[in-house]
Length: 118
Image 1 (cartoon, rainbow, N blue to C red):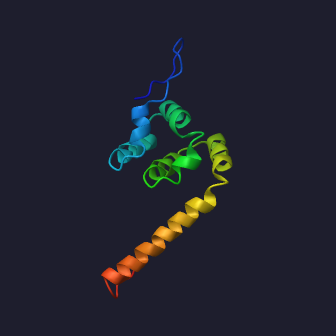
Image 2: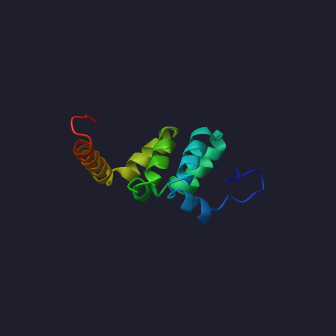
């Protein structure tokens, strides 16, 4: 999946297959685990190949945002700074979508199960 660059090896290229898995309901859980538990060198390669520069698009995706959130738990200070810079223009969309979904879920639960709290 990811080859950590060693002496004399060219840097790895992003895989279309892995980029597709970011958006797949089932496979995204595996990617969350990979981002959470991979060795630091592998995590940094995955971050650079698949998330850096794409966070604004992936963070608003209904599936990929979970992988992004799991990866953000592990970033170093510089990666966090870069992520904040990249996401500063989409925060209202991310937060607005999340609040909207929560509101709609609450209404649905209240209609489905009267007297129940979320």
